[in-house]
Amino acid sequence: MSSRWARETFGVLAGPLAEAVPACLTRAHERARGGHQGVHTQTLEAYGHGLHAVQYEELAAGLEHLPGATAVRLQARTVMIVADHVVHPIRYAKTDVPVTGARLRSVTGLRADLIRRHGPEPLQMELDLGLDEVEEQEVHPDLGQLPPGVGLVLVAYACSMDRGVMRLEWGSAELRTADRHLLRHHHEPLPMPAPGRPDVA
Image (cartoon, rainbow, N blue to C red; front, top):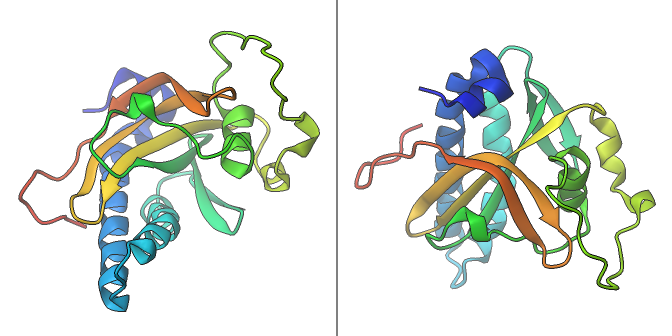
């Protein structure tokens, strides 16, 4: 059953989305792991870069058939809009740690601008500590392809090549510029395949 937040955000699509998103990211992990095994590198570079690319591809393929879903290209990646919300994946950790500690690598760039522009209103104003502010006119140009009123749902997950998807949550968050921390307004877990079972498509 879908939660009240999910139903308020996605309406009748809440249930189908809650089932589709974990399956998509499980397939993304399997593809990235297969890519790593195919090139036989001693580092996890192939896995990490592969997962970054295929997470978007799998979400696009898994969500495109939902009623009203539309695809947009942001920084050469296909991102899905469902029920007037961008569904955006973030691999926030390689270990099984809570999503409340998630941070972005940078306070600039497409992902940071997406959260500032289409995420929730800040819970509180940041203190002026003399830090340089990100100038509004430097917003990533690809965001102009998004409708002005579209919202943002972050799909945050912890994943490693050996353990697969360990944690998976969705919700909303604001970006705290001072420390790159994602301050969660709402987050809730999505179901994952049971431990010890092969991932299902």
